[in-house]
Length: 95
Image 1 (cartoon, rainbow, N blue to C red):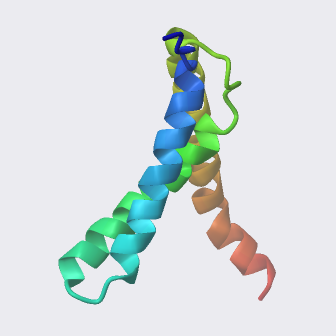
Image 2: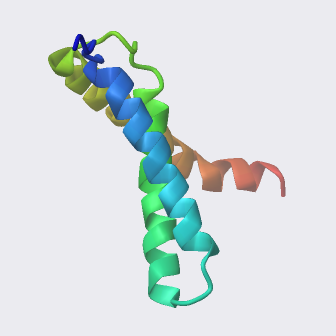
């Protein structure tokens, strides 16, 4: 049997999509508030990870995927930090 090996980045993208779907299911359930909270945090983490992983070429190997993932996560954190720092100044412009 000849099974083609999938590149790491493509596998990681598929795992993240399943993780996001499970997070949405946890948010949608009405049994436990704790499961809702876990689902919400999980969805935020998986969505931010999907932003980074979605920019990695699907053919990238493990090492390149990790380097690009860390680079994109650092970029996302930087953009969030700049946005948070600028928000009060931008709000004061509207007054």
